[in-house]
Image (cartoon, rainbow over all chains, first blue to last red; front, side, top):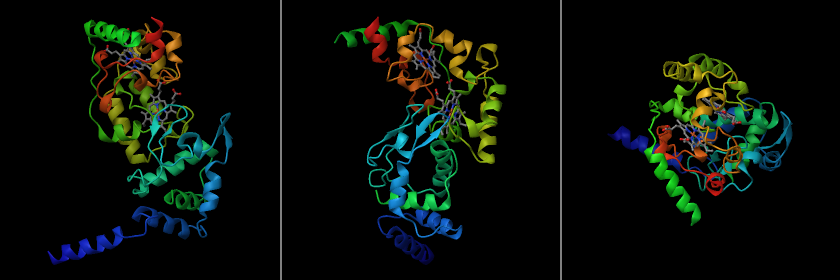
Length: 132
Length: 153
């Protein structure tokens, strides 16, 4: 019982991390750092968000599907499916699952830029997105 | 107003046709992963060979990257193959359900105009017309039609 109380207190501490972070984002940023990323640059993340590449004949960027108003839903450019907002202020599910974040970075970087993103690019994007 | 009346007629008509309900088995992993970018398309609508081929090529999935980790891919492949369609009308060289004989026949009443309606965009956008709650209901009574059609006829 005492143990449980102690555990709850520790969890409470975690829950009290500053607004622009989640346990999952902390884990990932530490991982990117250990893999060679330098200090994350949110301004670079913001610029990269709208950086266009031509992939399979189509001009693509992150904003193609997600838009640039992070409090609003986006739309998949091919299927039309609604994509829930990227801002954690309006969508509490965002940035809470390490595996999910990594999975979609992998897929969407390939879709939008035709290649995987570097750890630095991912650190920049994540830091930028957490602040939205 | 005219539109509502037309919709009502359509709904009424639809109620009277023989419902060939498409029952979709429950599978949480499949629904989550294969329902992320579009509705989770019912496994009965392609053959086992077709699903196998699709699941072997998720890195290049209709112009999108839908890669899964090996364990999840195997579990979903098993589910799709176990519930796949067996008849020739569900076979598709392009791996598109929308190009099967079955799909074309079920949808023969739909005009070319309706397929390219801005709310539809692509025939694979089932949700534009079907109210697929939880991916499990495909009955005709759950149909919802887009402007293109009701305006026209």
